[in-house]
Length: 344
Image 1: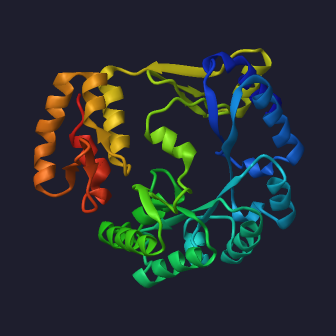
Image 2: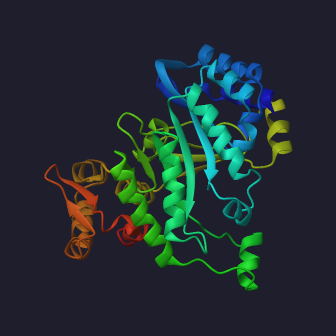
């Protein structure tokens, strides 16, 4: 797998051309299982074949049960300068409900060690879990604040079909999701993070000054990115590509110097819809000037017509700099609002 990933980097380096690499992200699966030598071998290929800025943001995703003190020390000695830790909750019953492998004790132990070696840490927290009271959710947030992490990504619990949780809910073994509960938790999340000096720069992302995720921000602002590995997605502004999800097929193709990916050329409408959806999720909003320049007068006029109802409801507004922005009242509804502004 490691050789296949490195070979894919070599085969696709022409896609980057002379662009500078600002961020590197080890995500998906469990990249923390890699040894330091293995991680460094990937860095060697990147730095020998691509142009990387002097101080890139380099993130590694990990689960609490994968991060022993020895592993954290090793990671801190590498080029990695940011950790993304999937805490999800500081309560064992929630973790069991979400079928997580780690325990609350492991989460706390992991963070107490990680914060000694890394300044830049983000954690994931899940809200809207059935039977999670507001007090319990507040306790989750306060424990995160007590560890001094400078960034939190927080999402409402969702239930995918054909999962164990979906079947349990369907059979009445556990309560279903409650949108009002999720909204209460979201509002508490916004107010409590604000008290701690966090900025909600994207619907689900809260960072202290200078701790916004540069990598994820590039997605939301529509910048190009190259993804390598099974299931990885890439985007070049007009085309999206994705690798085969099967590990064996992925390795076999790369062994034969073939790229195991599919490419989709996005239509003008698709590019516009994505621009609207991602922009409305961020603090920066949607540039009306960019809509006009990139898509044309007709798209701008239609957008302005369609936004009138949402502006009158107080969920959207146009800033003095001519950006369409989601108001605090509209943030929880951002994806639904965006879908109503799509061009089909």
